[in-house]
Image (tube, rainbow, N blue to C red; front, side, top):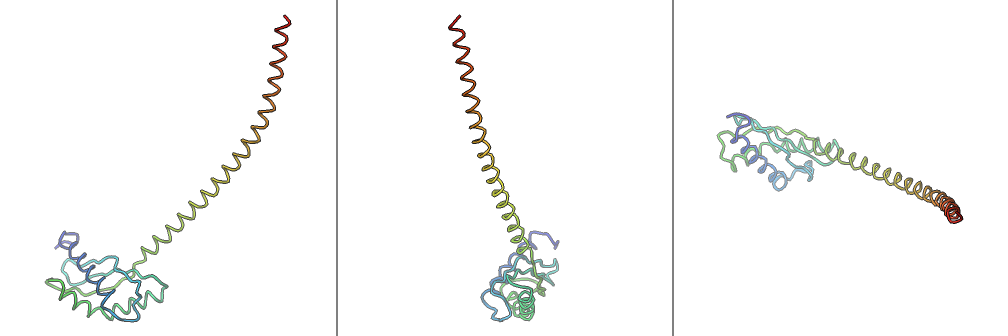
Length: 161
């Protein structure tokens, strides 16, 4: 079975679902953070091993404690996988901390901050343009009045002729 085959992809998804349920409902280890989620599972083509990528909200100590708690519960989870899924071999589980979600949240915050700064600077530019426009409107009014005076003078000269 190839690594990216349809069957392997389906098995990865099924193992992920079962492990997510087990971690959230069955395992009562106090070391495991309640905000732990299974991000992805990669089962080897021979079904002997599986890499389980987990995401844990919390500090590094909490992440490591959760990984150790899951490692100690791996045999229980493997037994539950064997009962739930009808596989030729039940894979040995290796838990790997995945920080991609945290990285994504961090990048999202940075983008929001840049957008806020951009909007704030745009507002300042708009206010400056409004001030400049009102100043130029006042000066335009002055010149237009003097232009009107000149026009009146020309009109008077035309009438006298």
